[in-house]
Image (cartoon, rainbow over all chains, first blue to last red; front, side, top):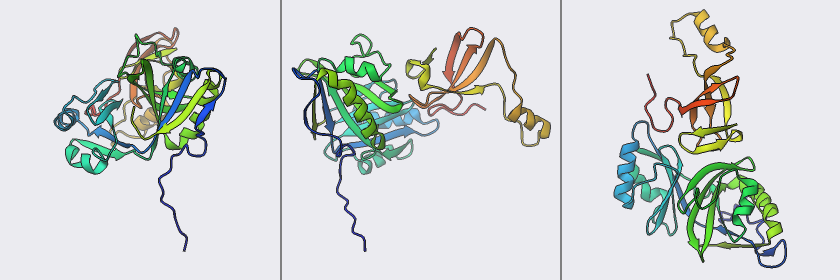
Length: 207
Length: 91
């Protein structure tokens, strides 16, 4: 009888080495993997986008994003992920699949992505310079403000990119990437960031 | 070349995949062999403005109808294809 281990592990566990990497001096880029989050994709069923929005408003108290934006409540972030669909990102088990299923029963289909995505938070003085090497999105503050979202590609890998609240006066860019592509994208990001000096870590806290 | 996705905004060509002419309509089930052959195989080779289907696979994963001049690559309109998002499929 084969024994299986069902321990929850990060897809980046093999490659994420916490600490200081790359060029010496002040680190220009900070990479933090956020672990153990709840992520549910909500997609409106045919012709029921309005009903889905109403259900979201009733449950979260905010209007779900209908354009590429991220909207935060006290305990969840709603992130646009395509026309008539969005992610619910949260911690602490309050907005799991089981909790959201009755909320959206009827107007939307839900899909649990909690263990299907890796969440990487990028910040630092050189965060934009580093991301510019792997993304064609204009991340200038005038065109990508706090709450802006882009579903785009980096290194031929689909990502959901959004700008979180500033931390210590610095912009924070969050990346959701498919779990099985995360290791590959991680290497690319690390290569791009090395020249600026990188601080790597992981956290249980959503930015 | 850049395409302005109606959902995502202006994006580079690499995020999109070309399907082809948006004009052919699936014939009725009883339309006969010639109509089906035409629908499946025969395409006009247009030098000028044509409607095309493009897929924004590197972005919002929506099908788009792009009106493009094949001589100049000028894009005059981009709109969601029928049924993109939660829209009702056009009859």
